[in-house]
Image 1 (spheres, helix red, strand yellow):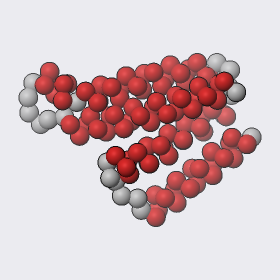
Image 2 (image 1 turned 120 degrees about the vertical axis):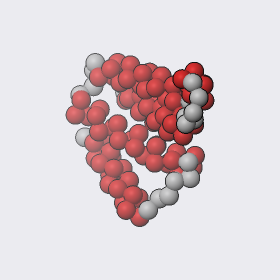
Image 3 (image 1 turned 90 degrees about the vertical axis):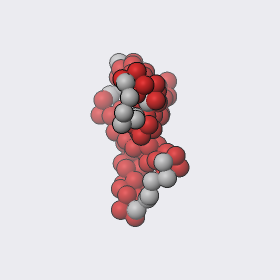
Length: 114
């Protein structure tokens, strides 16, 4: 059961990292020195660091969890990023995207019950 929490934490941190990458990418100025760009895009650097932490947690969980069980749970990150994109970046949600999200959730439920 502890491994499941580690997987969920890994997925959550990875999703936050993805949001940081997007936010940082939006802040990269077109001009300026590399140092100025790096300072302006600190969320990009933070996102990369969070991906690193997420990867370390993932490796820790994989020591004892079946990959065929753990890997589909990564798709929870898609859901988290989908929701964050709507609220943070005000991205639109189409019916087709929402349908895809429902399919992902259905798959997660099936895997979690196995």
